[in-house]
Image (cartoon, rainbow, N blue to C red; front, side, top):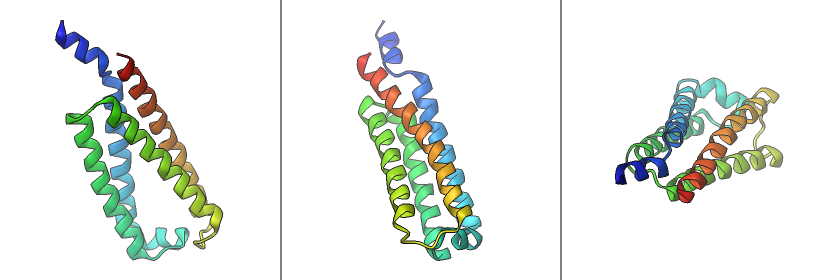
Length: 134
């Protein structure tokens, strides 16, 4: 009976959404590291910064994996969804500020990736609500 209550309070689909977030984050980090020179031109950043961002995403992807596999709680799911929202707002503000000389392709790439991040954030936040309601 207790096992059933625990599994129903932690829907497996939320765990899968966080794993998907980890995979997307990891692949984005890989793309940034491998294509740092080309992407730097489109994003208006130095290739070193693009590479460091990619490496940072590898670390974040690892953290996502650990949370999904070991520490899945409503609070952590809310936190991950919230961090995704912060990422979206931050990158959109960066584009609006024109602080970086981004190309239209670079802006499009960021907007497209933010759509994916928004879907993942929504899944994590909805899942956190379901878990907290039991």
